[in-house]
Amino acid sequence: MSDLKPWLKNYPDEIPATLSYTNEPVQKYLKNTAEEFPNKVAIHFMGKEYTYQEVYEQSYKLAGYLQDLGIEKGDRVAIMLPNCPQAVVSYYGILMAGGIVVQTNPLYMERELEYQMKDSGAKAIVTMDILFPRVTKVMANTELKHVIVTAIKDALPFPKNLIYPFIQKKQYGISVTVKHEGNHHLLTEILKQPNRKLKELEFDFEEDLALLQYTGGTTGFPKGVMLTHKNLVANATMCNAWLYKCKKGEEVVLGILPFFHVYGMTTVLILSVMQAQKMVLLPKFDPTTTLKTIQKQRPTLFPGAPTIYIGLLNHPDLQKYDLSSIDSCISGSAALPVEVQQKFEEVTGGKLVEGYGLTESSPVTHSNFLWDRPRIKGSIGVPWPDTEAAIFSLENGERLPVGEIGEIAINGPQIMKGYWNRPEDTEQTLRDGWLLTGDLGYMDEEGYFFVVDRKKDMIIAGGYNIYPREIEEVLYEHPDVQEVVVAGIPDPYRGETVKAYVVLKEGAKLTEDELNKYARKYLAAYKVPRSYEFREELPKTAVGKILRRALVDEEKKKLQNDEEKRA
Image (cartoon, rainbow, N blue to C red; front, side, top):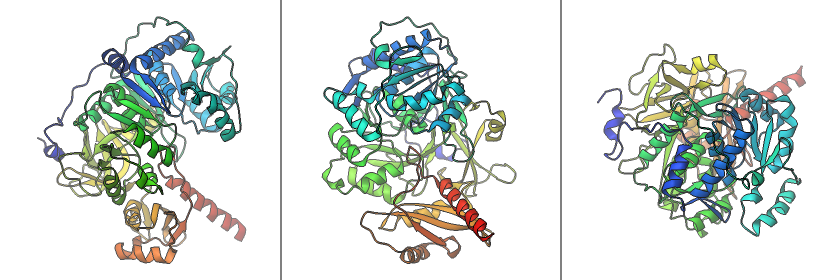
């Protein structure tokens, strides 16, 4: 065993250091599972259930229809849907047709949608009825030729399907009617049609793209991450190896993480199909609905993000719900506060561990062990099978020894092919097969990795390097704090200064002075925030990741306005 991979000695016997991967494209897993478990429930959605056979047949019909519309191998087809059965059918249907999926956030406004459609060159899009007007407004400026429309009501049982349009009209203030004609297509009509025989397509497992997954774009324009069939299959296979106590065909997976986010797509949409698990889908995160769903549907696996777990733990009626079915949770997308981890495990009796990854790595590269090994406080865990990780110097790019802080770099079969039509960005991020993550961290002697912060989020105040994550961990431990994010804001004297944005727990009363005294007990003076701002909520992405840069941009605008007033 190489000294460069000290983490391997900590692997339990059940997790192999290297795995074997089938050379089958992602969509083949749906066919395999439908053949092996045709009558097993694949999806539960708001009271209605779909078997694997039904999901496969619907995906096949959509694939044939797309091919008849002229979609050819390698064409991009967008999906702009929340988590619902149609999102599953669309995903696998596009891949069966030979298309490349372009996952699109349903919250995107016209400018963001137009940019992504132009950049990807998508020829068709599957979307919701209430988003149809938004899509039609951008079509003329893009290569979009066809819009396939569905509605939440189409996936609901009777009588919910009759009631839901009235709820939707009240909630969104619009009612949209789309006819199945011209370049507008209704998914309900497509699924009524007889099967079309699919064209036989050859797939290059290692080279052919399955997905264009756009990065968040909190700085600059979002980039299309090119993920191959091998990237996605490899990461789902690794995830399955990590969850070695889970049994094929027996787990129930809670699907709150949106499929348009790569973490939800890999750990729910692909892994569930690969392992014949039942997906319990929720179109958005609502704490009350989620608690009711957990109690009724008894999920065993719950991949999530810290803000989701925090939202549940702070629900006023948490104690009224039985969450004991939850066995395993891997948290991603942001740092998991230790207090949240411990409290969630107490409430559920299950295991919650922190993982780590990026869109560019399909996404998971590291995780703590769920079973049979001690958990290391504050660590993102160890690299997954077939995944190599190292710490590189920011100054000369050389590999750093144990304990030294540098940039985390990853190598493995889940690493992206590159950025869509951006060779320069690809060259900067991929070097000699290594993905440079932009995260600063270190590795200990046992091979456990620790993230100290994003390279771009590191605060340099008065010559000191300050890592926001360290301060956030301290503030999260205050009993009155529900959420917190720390950012470096412009300061004419120190260059940057530390500011904390805080959301208090319901009913809590805490002053800036009290919180500051608390921080001074645990942090060196130069790390203590110079100011605190209490807010009702913090800006977040759809998956619940707090948008630190949005807060920094707010501060810059305030500073600019103040300077203009003084001028």
